[in-house]
Length: 502
Image: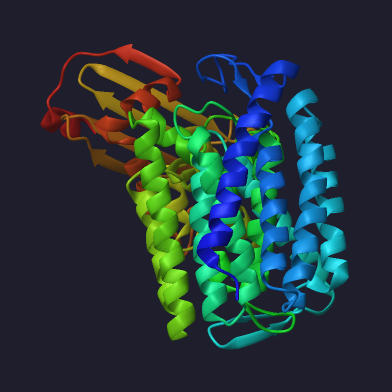
């Protein structure tokens, strides 16, 4: 029987000693990270290559674990070999990237080369279980396994942007996955989780704020790969059958960060692998929190999701873990701590695409389409173009928007270019909306041929009101006034006088 305390102590001591040695070597050989005043804002030159010390200490811990088990667990030795060889590969090209900065696509290719043999060697996920339902993956087994491991690697890699953060997240995640594996009767997986925890604890002594050495890609990718393997192997119900709840919920915070990064970069016109300073730890730091406070908050959140996943595994209540994860994500977005901007960008895109799809299906205004026009996430230019497109079924020849704001009158016109200018409009519909500042917003549509059905006029009236409500509020003036084509000064009038004149 392995003495867990002894194994943790061996790994911890090895990690601490190797980190001191690697730090001195990195400084001597010039393997350092220099601040650039943009993304890298740390003080002074910091040695890189901490991942090498972490990896070597893990090797010593795994060898000690197999020696202390007296060869009684074949699964422990096999999984240890996977961690050693695959971890060694990602540590090597991660160190190369720390030194010469590899191309992002090349790094992704190397990650695939590291994890694909793992999936082909029989560590793939053939079935997943969630809420008691079993899903056969079939031909998707290997691709999904590869995506899971690559997702874990990059999640820990992207979150490694602050002193000690990747170490704290990795430590709390490994600890929770070790408990989950133990509760499922997979002690050999919990032993490897203990080794990773000991290595991270020893490294954290010198990596805590202010850090005297950085993990670098060589360390963050090793942590991500190992955590991904622990999540797969520790939550197996049977051979190749994975309970997806535990690993997904434990990794929900790093995965949320990477999903938000992809959404943010894609919807703002940047490449998905372009670096920025808008990750969750950057946002919290910009709100005035200290590095130690950010570490405590994110560490507590990871422990919360991990505890929920552990409880869900023990009591067989998947809903408990997913509800906790959902509440956490919603809380971060609603409190604007993280993800609010990405959620707003995604919501606007979905609204636009939904509206384009419904407009493609029918050119008649339907309930719900007017909601797109008055939606706050939609720009006035987009709403105006949408209005112009949607009024065409009523044979509108002229559309005018007029806003009175005290003595200021602003106008916006649209005239159908396909209609002869000498042709007269035979009917008109006007919608007036009072502003809270005693102003008036008026929208007038002139048509060639009056619709025969009263229901069509009602729909047109609803459409004009929807746009009028979008632009009539004084709070929107910063956006409305530049939108108007003509602004001129008129004599002051009361609201009653303007109504009589109309």
